[in-house]
Length: 242
Image 1 (cartoon, rainbow, N blue to C red):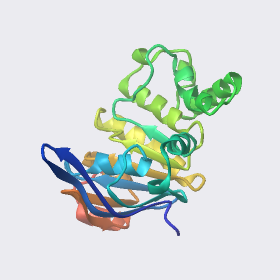
Image 2: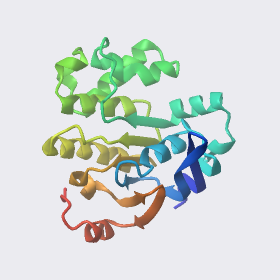
Image 3: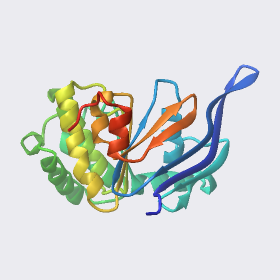
Image 4: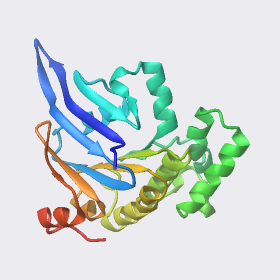
C-alpha cells in the first residue's frame, strides 16, 4: 500500500545565538491508510517538530514532504492553510475548545471554516457528538464537562469534516488511565473507516497497545520502526493490551 504520508531526508534546525541547533536529522518517515501509527520518544526528541512539518505548519530546512499526494515542501502558505482545513483533523492534549461556545458550536467550527451553512454544520456536529457518546450534552459549555468528555468533543471536532489524516498530539497524557483507554477506543473506528490515517504522538506507554505500527524517535532521528503489533509487544512487554 502506498504511504499517505512520506518524509525523506528531512532536516530541521533552529537558531541558537550565533549558531543553530539541529532538531531533526535525516528523518525518513511513512504512514499508511487505515492504520494507527504511534510516534514515540522522550521529550525534546523532535516529535512535535516532525508533526508540525508533516502538517505544513513548519517548514523543513531540506527534504521531501508528501502528504496525501501533495508535496508540502513545494506548496505556498495560502494553499497550505486550505490543505490543512480540508484534509487534516487535530486532537490536542489540552483540548483547545472555545470556552464561549457550546460543544455543538465547537464541533461545527471546521465545517464553518470551509463555508458549510450553519444549519448543516450544526446538524453534522450533533451527529458526530452522538457518535462519541455526548448526545445528552449538546448545549453544554466545555467547562461543565470532565476532561474525558472534553477530549471526546475534540475528537468529534477533528472528525466532523471527515479528514483523511487525523493527528493526535498527546491525546491521553492529561487523562487518567481508564479515560485514556476510552479515548483510544474512539480512535479505532475512524482509523478503519475509509482510507484514513491516524498518527498519535505520545510518550504515554499506557496506550501503546493501540498502535498498529510505531516509530521510535531519539535525538532528532527515527531510531527504529516497529511494523506490527507483535513487534511492538516484544519491544514493550509491559504495555497495556486493549
